[in-house]
Image 1: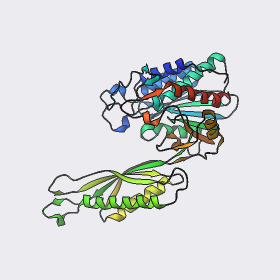
Image 2: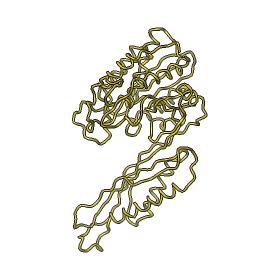
Image 3: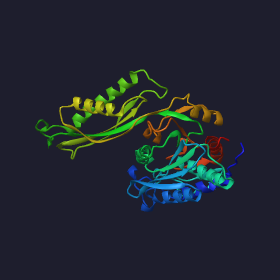
Image 4: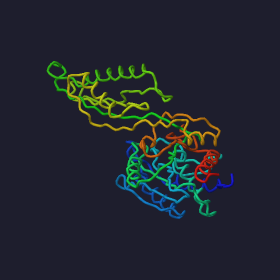
Length: 384
């Protein structure tokens, strides 16, 4: 390969960015230092880096104080390729290692966000330095999306999807950056979460017949959900991703040991297989909950992402597999790829490091993984 991306530059970029906290505040976890919250500082850093490296930079507010950053560079064709790298991380309160030191030790870069997914952003910044210094040209126009809100709902990706369509961008290929051990991921399940509230009638527990027990009604919903899970597992899977699943994950109700409970909430998590329609399945689950009890059941929350599926035979998937000596595979987790159902012709999830190293009490990425991944970016963007 003719283009060499210095490892020390990738490491330097990553170490700097790990030292910029960008915790997603929507995770519901305690955060001891408010300066750690949100992608604001990270976005400012990335925007300046894009500008210094010759990019046309644009901000788009997604949530208060939280902006997507778009960097664009001209290529030799009218078509576009997109790299989506999310800037947010999960919380750090559970970490046993310094979360933001960005140290380099044992051939690894350490800290929250190092593998998920600031490493991929470091790779592209190091590559852009070489492109600028050597006056190289990209095969296609390049758009790097530094997105917000991926860890809890994909808010930034949803906003970018609308923005890109309004811009009329002719997008040929999209890489969604996630830690995949440099293997191309072509599919994953979608999901939705429901919070249902069951309304009963309170009464003294010595006379339960005078009330209507919301917890008892909720228990019937739990049983109905379990039956729905069994139905899903009995069906024949249409793809390698497998069947959808459903589970009750939280339940909360009652106000005292001697009071018939007036209300109970039930949280349901549904994982969607490819080609399942999220709206249809939400309606199905709400209907089965209401059929399970005569008490009123109201929907308090419904959030979801569709499944992602790209034919594994497509050129982008196969090229990356060949370049890295890996096999196309699927993921157990959801990504921003689910937010782009009709945006690009081909899409793949790809990046250095393992998902097993993310979200834990420590986080790190091997520099060797970064070196492997940047070779893919050179081939993808420059034709090397």
